[in-house]
Image 1 (cartoon, rainbow, N blue to C red):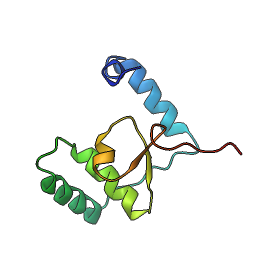
Image 2 (cartoon, helix red, strand yellow; image 1 turned 60 degrees about the vertical axis):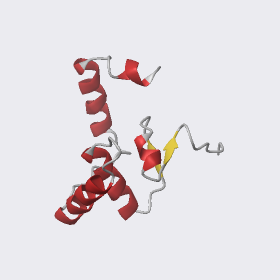
Image 3 (cartoon, helix red, strand yellow; image 1 turned 30 degrees about the vertical axis):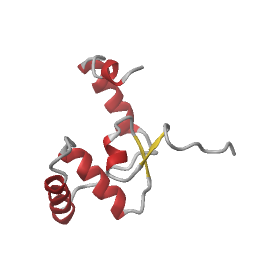
Image 4 (tube, rainbow, N blue to C red; image 1 turned 45 degrees about the horizontal axis):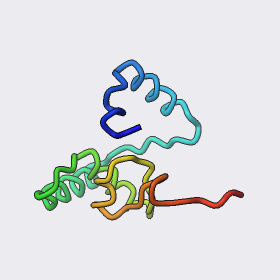
Length: 95
């Protein structure tokens, strides 16, 4: 599936996927505090030549605060921000 196709799935499918993700025991919801938000907005301003969303900048600040190197995403903007993408960039051995 190409990235453009993912945006065409529609609101209902996206809402169902969001519900499944939020109810998964393996997902942690991390609140964004003031210092994280300030760091993300500063990073957003610094990357003025890129069209990277504030949400992506916030995600990478949260990941960096937790020493996370890989992000599950299909958005190459995370590579620009210094992260490896799962599944594209990282392969995990079975077991």
